[in-house]
Length: 272
Length: 284
Image (cartoon, rainbow over all chains, first blue to last red; front, side, top):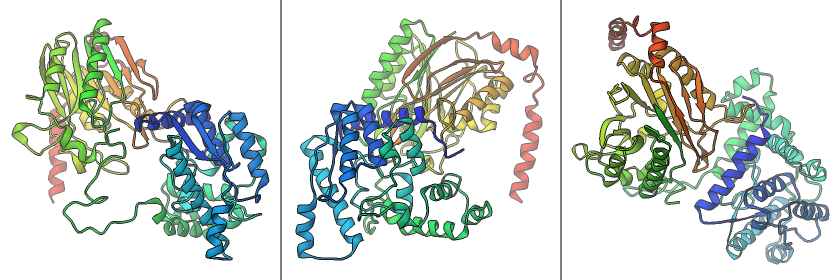
């Protein structure tokens, strides 16, 4: 086992997944948020291959003029993929809310923006008759680096079992534009923000530790014995635990004889 | 003997649709003059059923779907997977496989080793089979194993000891892990056992795995046939629907067992004696 991926194989599995899942739910079209970053560009590339460019919509949803370069990169990626990519500015909706409930918290503002984008995506999903493709990767999902009911919300997620490092490998194989490949990952919560700055570790380091803990099932102790820094392993373990609630449906208080999530157990693909 | 391995992607929970797909594939295989058509595990129902198990269960003596498959077995023998619930065993659901030939069911195997760990939860929904038995067919003695059964050394041995010359394994094995080749890393495990069983149990090993997705899980395909000398005779693509048809030579078993008399030299009574001692020690 290794964190190295096999590019052609990953593309085959993920494009088949996108095509077959959509078909099961009666869709031929997919929609996703296009940020100009690596994950959404890779997801859009896979979707265009799986469904044909005409069947993919990449919504570009900037907050005003905060990140003009990302908007340009997203447009450029969409042009190359030949997918439709309308721009919807979320500033009027977000500003209206914060006029009434002001805050200085960058996290609160970031979360609100992520949920505004989610709300627009779900609205356009119905308007366009297109299923929402998620772009959260395995690293973000495991350490909880995402907004619950925001950027984590989707109908199916083709990228959720690939670490950020692996998405980067896949992007190189898919020949994603260099401008996007070379960018430092950011959630775009505020200008100058980078994921790695906020997490306090590089993705390369996080992914190696996650790969050991999750894929290879080592204990924290074993991971440290292998040479990973104790402080980093502890921090990552803490992040995984603290974000478990983002990876599950909320618990339902069991009171009846048969309860959703406890003993009412059907496949997601029920009758599909 | 001409065999057809049907590497299909069953529709989850829709017996009707799956039956139609079975009948179409049988027609196709019969046109190619196949003697035997093998479908994967739970081919009539799909795999990740959970609470749907009871709604798709069939009584092999009564179900119309099984009558249709039995009728079609006059042209070619058929092995398929289904959920079994007999009138005489109400409320017990088995992950089962039937071998039909000449319009009759010759054998039903109920999966003995039900994986229940990690992403598997079979013991939560299925009853456990209690028998691993070789049975007579028009092409010599055969035995059936279902997916995880095959990975238990004793299951293959019991078919060998019981006199089977052909081992039929039907599977719904998910793909796990990247490899350097074209398939999942986990496919190697099945191929290794196929080769080992071919070579050391000296049987033809027919392994049919399904494809398609259920709840995000990809089934790996890569169905294969090993000869009684442990030689790979044919292999289906990973992850693609395919009907693999090939001729196998039933005399290969004789050739293999003549050259390396593992079967002649086997000592089931010694095995049994030792097993009894081991079991006795458990009780202490």
